[in-house]
Length: 429
Image (cartoon, one colour):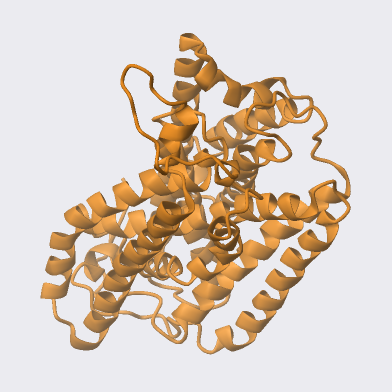
C-alpha cells in the first residue's frame, strides 16, 4: 500500500547551496570560448560575418525555444491545476525567467537590423520597404513591398522589445509570486496565479507566433506557412521538458532535492517528451504535406534546398529519423520511461536533434539571395561545422549560467505550495 507523505520538504539541500559561485564564471568562460571560436573559424569562409551571425542565430533560437517552452510549462501547469508538477515547476520558473536577460544575447543581431544591414535578414536590404508605397487594388505592388510594411527595422525592433518584455513580465510574475509564497505561505497566491494563467497563455501564444515569424521564418521573407509557429512551439516545448528532466537529474546526483522529485515525476516528464516528439513530427509532416500537395512556387521554394540540396538532403533524413522515430521508440514503454539512464540519454539525444533542427531551419539561407535556387556548395563538414557546433555549445553554456545566476541560493522547489502534498504523493498508475 502506498504510504502517504506529509506535505513538507525533507531533503537536506534544496538550493544550489553556493555551487553557482563556481559554476557561473566557468560556464561564462565556456560560453565565451565557444562563441569566440565560432567567430574565429567563420573567417575561413567566404562571407565570415554573415556565416557567424547565421550560426549564432540558430543557436540563439535553440536556447530561446527552451526558455519559451519552460514558460509554457509553468503557465499550463497553473491553468490545469496540475499538482503533480509542483516540485519540478520551480526549475521551469527559473528557466523561464532567463528569457528577459537573453535579450542581451540577441543584441548582436538586432544591431545589424537597426543599422539597416542585410547581413542576417535579407528583407533589410535597401529598397525592400513599404514606406510611401500606395496599394492600388487594380495594380497591387510586389509582395516584397507589401511584406515590407511588416518587415522593416523600426517595427522589427518594436516587436522584439515587446516579445522579451512580455516574456520577462510573465516569468517575473510567476517566479516572484512563487518565492513570496515560500516566505508567507499565502495560499491565495496560487489561486491568483491560476486566474492569471488564461490571459497569460493568450499573451504567450501571440508572442510565440510572431517571434517565430520574425526570428526564423523571415530569413526567407517570401515564404508562406501558417503552421511554422506551431512547429517552433512543439520542438521548443519538447526540448524544455528534456531540459527540466536533465536539470532534475543533475540536482539529485549532486545531493540536492533528493526526496521531492521521484521516479513518478520522471515517468510523467518522459510521457510528455514522447508526446511532443510525436506532435513535432505530426506538425512537420502536415506543413510539408500541405505545401507539397498545393505545389505553389511561393511555398515550395523553401523546401527545395532542404530536400534537393546536396548538403541538406542527408540532414533532412537525419532529422526525420533521429528527431522522430528514435526517441519515439526509446520512450515507448512504461519500463523504459522509468529507467533514469535511458531517460537521460533520450533527453540529451532530443536536445541535440533540436539544435540540429534550428540549424536546418536557419543555415540553408546562408549565402543565398532572395531569388536564388539550391545552395549546392554547403556541407556540414570541415572546420566551419566545428565552429557551428562550438557556437551551439557556447550558447547553451551561457543559458545554464543564466539559470545558475537567477537561481542563486533560492529554493529549487516551492516550500509552501498548497499542492506540495499532492506532488510528494504523486504516483503513476
